Length: 358
Image (cartoon, rainbow, N blue to C red; front, top):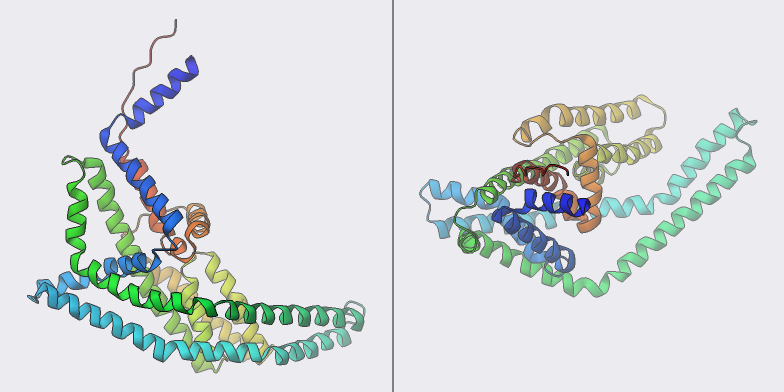
């Protein structure tokens, strides 16, 4: 009986407020929809995300006395034009360098054979020719398996071409209508909630500030870091500068881990191209400067309004939400973790008097 009293007291303390019930229901409904139907409605969700990010541009144009419908069409045209420019201008360059890197794998193995062969010559007691050949054979087999897996993956995607086309059609359509009618949709949802909703409004404001600041900041950070890395590597003459710049830019989506992981391919490409030389040192120094400026200058400027989270909390959020929703889960991991924190801080608590023990 004592246990049931404790459970009943906890429920009465945390769920006696009507708004708390509404909030729990809304969160559960959103989780169920995303978990079970997220893959099917992905184009609509992507359109919603882009509309949310660019709605501020529409509002700014309206403040400049541009009719709202005209502002929507202007932002929509800029979005479509930017997407087309990205596909036509940048994507082919990255794809070409990716193809070149795959085709260069045999040469990389030969270069490694020479380097490791030098080790066996200089340190015959530690690196015997038999051991070196075994390493190289295993590496060659692994590279071959990776190539087969990549080829099979591309072939497996051929039946999904129709789905990709549907995605590319529905995303801009969803984006346009969310941009045009988003405020009226939000008003309809709010009309179904209680008029007095202090908790929901508090959490909603916190979520709006955190997600808007974080996602827009991440988009700017990816663009700046990726472009700076590409230009630096291009200036230094490093192979696959566009591909590495793209990878480094995307790596900022995963805090702490992304920069550490991307260091490996950057160092590998630089070492295989330049060996132990000053050129290799310049490449790694440029990469280190970019990472330092990103972490100590760019991130504080872009995310000044984002609440601080412990690094362990961020890593757990990235792993958990990324495991649930893949790319979108990683992208929204930090604002979702901040939302959980905001809900915890704003959650109503009722002091329940404890009955004296008899």
